[in-house]
Amino acid sequence: MSILKDYREQVDPDFSYLTQKILIIGQSDLLGKPLYWHIKKLMEKGATIPVAFGEACQIALDQAQKSDEKCEVKLVGKQGLEEIIEQKKSLKDFRVIVSATGQKNLLHGDLLAPHSILIDVGEPQGDIDLQSCLNKVDFITPVPNGVGPMTVMSLMANALDLLKSVV
Image (tube, rainbow, N blue to C red; front, side, top):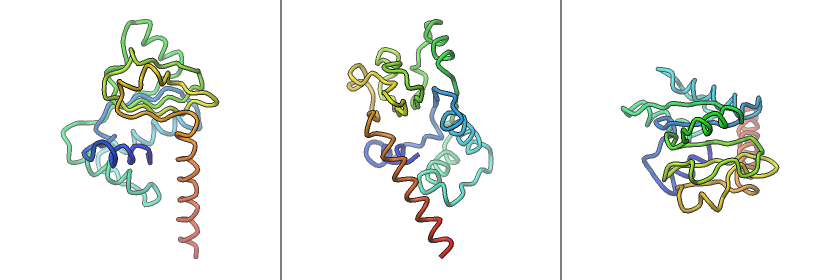
């Protein structure tokens, strides 16, 4: 979520991921499923944000509760993505795409809507073909040096918050 906070601060101050159509590619127990259920939980009426989730989540929730636009989130695996592509459907309906399959160059620019936000969590290689997407999307995380450093930073911030709460 820190990455989407950066997007809001650097590109679009009115952006809230909880008012967007979101596609999560990759159904892992480490990222895909927890992220999907986290967003679904936040979309429930009367949802609250634990302090540990941070300011980015709270701002997104506040904006979503004031907005007429509602978030939709879809979780698919590689096979689900292949089915979408085989049926000649595109990913252009989704503003935010989080991809975590580790399949090199799985996503190409011709599948995406202009101004998309792409978060590539593919490891050890990027899921997104950077060259075909660079001039089409608003925001893209590179692999390496994209999500990984943000994860380390978030873990350290959480560890410090935990330490402060016990001291």
